[in-house]
Length: 147
Image 1 (tube, rainbow, N blue to C red):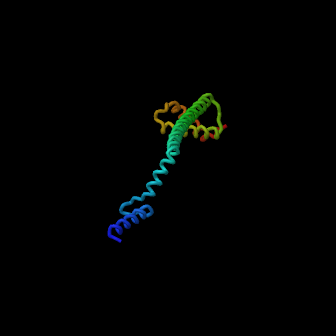
Image 2: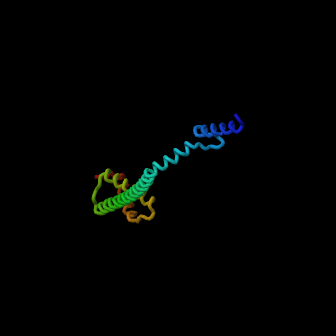
Image 3: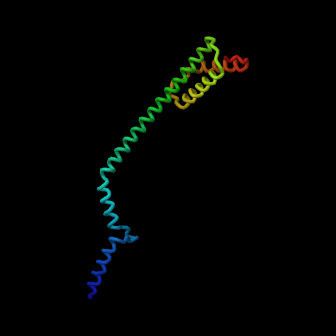
């Protein structure tokens, strides 16, 4: 065997081994590269569908957030209506139970929290009514005049 044949055979053996062995400093494995390329080609449509699905999920999440905001605003409006109605009933001399007062006080808390969290929400519509409810509640406690 000549030196040329030995070198050629050594290079051949290294080429065959390089397909199966990843050399650390070079960090290139032809089989890994080939499998990655084939995988990308085979899954291209699946990846596209996945990206479309992600976009649809984002749209649904946005819609849910908008619905949640609308529902919270509607709850605040409902609190306000109940507070104002309760205040009107007090002005007309209607007596209430302690439980009714407890409920309207919970409505006042919920309404005030919503107003604090949403400064753009039209507010100050229940300030005087809330004050009158609190005065009446305090008087009912002092005099034990609940319904």
